[in-house]
Image 1 (tube, helix red, strand yellow):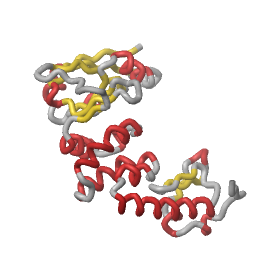
Image 2 (cartoon, helix red, strand yellow; image 1 turned 180 degrees about the vertical axis):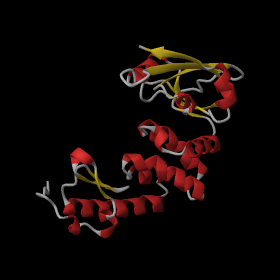
Image 3 (spheres, helix red, strand yellow; image 1 turned 90 degrees about the horizontal axis):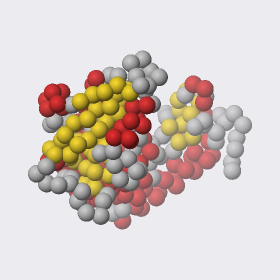
Length: 226
C-alpha cells in the first residue's frame, strides 16, 4: 500500500483538494463523492482512485448500469446522487425502482437528506419492498414504531419499524442525553406506506409522514424510555 508520511495536499488534483477538511481528532481528511480517506494518507492513491472510478462510472453509465454507477460513490453520496439524477430526469424510473431497496438499506442517517426529496423520490417510484411477496394488507392500517431522542419534531421522520424492540434499541441510544429517549407508536393507513424493508433485520417501514402529519400529531402514542 502506498502509505505517505505527512502527505502534502498540493500533490492532489484540484478536484480532490477542494474536498479536504479538518475533522478534529482525525486531523485532515478527504471526503470527495468518489474518494474517501479518513484520515488523509496518500495523494497518489487518492488521485489513482479518482481516475479509476471516473472511468468505471463513465463505462457503467454508457452500459445503462445505473446501480453500478451509483455504488461507485462513497456512502453519504449514493442516495444524494440518486435524488439528483431523479430530479434531473436523467435516470429511468425502472432503474430507480430497482436500485432504491439496496441503496436505502445502505443509507445511514436519512435526516441528512432533505425529507421532501426523499418522500418525493419514494412517491414517484411507488411502493417498494424486499420481501418475497407484498407484505401489506390493502385497506388496513399498519402499526409502526419509532425510537427517537426527546425532540418532538423527530416523530416526523420517515423511517419507522413494525418491530417495537427495534424502536426501543434506537431510543436507548438517547437515554443518557437530556430528556432521554422516546418510543412512538401509531397506526398508519397502508396507502401512506411507501416502502417496507427487512434487509437490515429492522423490519423498516418508510412512511409518508408529510401527508400523515396532522393525524400523527393527534394520534401518536409516545412513551419515555428509561
